[in-house]
Amino acid sequence: MRILLIEDDSSLSEALAAILENSDYQVEVASDGLEGLSCALNGNFDAIILDIMLPGMNGFEVLSEIRARGVATPVMLLTARDSLHDKVAGLEGGADDYLTKPFAPAELLARLRALTRRFGEASFDHVSLGNTSLDLNSCMLSCGDKEVHLGFKEFSIMRILMTSSSCVTSKETLISKVWGSGSMAEGNNVEVYISFLRKKLAFVGSDLKIVTLRKVGYRLDVGEK
Image (cartoon, rainbow, N blue to C red):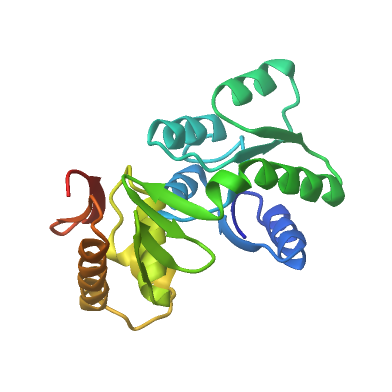
């Protein structure tokens, strides 16, 4: 399960990342609001832990923007601000939980498990868009009675595109997320797998279309078959 941790205090973020990784979570850390927003919009996470007091954009602004862009990933606000006003503002702004510093690691993990359980049935077994579904366990892409298995990189790209359908995903983001940030992969590697995916979408009769935005990236559009 992948967690995005947006926290500007480096010592705290390192400690939290270690706690989460020791509990078998995969953790990506962003150190300011702008970086966190970019990760939330372009990444593929099961939950976001978001500090309120951040440089660049504060947590409330990040939360507002990701909800406005259609990102439904559950968000836990993590902050030293414990006033009722801040809690209400966060929850009404789209947060799913609120944890005040200082806190016990056991409480963080318990709240995170509860948060992901609540969203698990709808979000973590499959992703659906238009008439098409992607099974996150079997890597099967299906539409009605037709289905096709996706290879690892095909699956990874398709999952990112389907869970970020409200925004454009760049080639650089796909290379970083699918091949790894230290990879020698280039844009033409992405183009090859996008071509594979287009053929498989056509094979199952999907109404999804992978649109190329020149020099920007890719976006999924839902239309008629």
